[in-house]
Length: 236
Image 1 (spheres, one colour):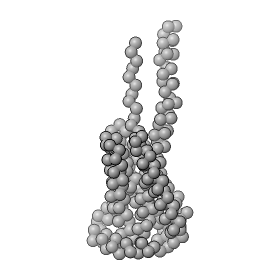
Image 2 (cartoon, helix red, strand yellow):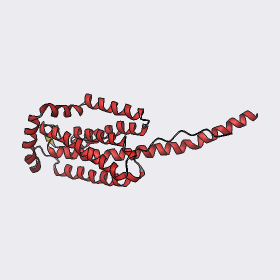
Image 3 (cartoon, rainbow, N blue to C red):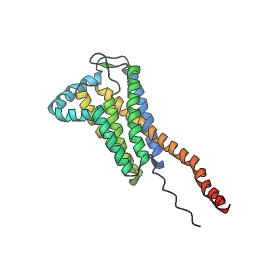
Image 4 (cartoon, helix red, strand yellow):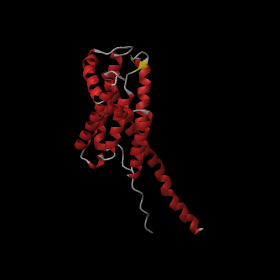
């Protein structure tokens, strides 16, 4: 009797060829988050780099305020939740359940990490508002990275990496421009938020792949045993 075809295994979030370079970038990004956090811990004013960048950022966002506000809205609860739901549905329609999990967990954990870091660093803006790292920049970058993950299995490793970090850079820069230009964050806060996403999203992707592979390996023997038991029952 021929054996029934097993369902195809879902695509991993991180292809094996990309794991090491992505991990290396994640470690470097995490170091940047830590170093910047140590440099600006307890501050309540712009640093020297911030002071040089802020005049241009503020003038450029004033000239393009509707665009800046639109980008800012994408990081607010309603805008962000809408984008997360949309990307999750698209991932499921494309039969990529692991990517759907990455959209939810990667974005959620990125925001959670920024929330945890803020009181530890205790950098403030406009009084008592904690500013480092920028959660808006982090969440925008995290979502951008998950969009690339939807398609990068069809690309060569070098092209996939270039697309991942190219998109992350463009989206992160746009979010940083809006946040710093609207005076919601210092520019260095947005660098910290961007690097937080670069560190958290790959780590989340690795955990999703690890858990899915482990669960499949544990469940595999149980699935194989079931037909044998049914055969013995029929002979009785």
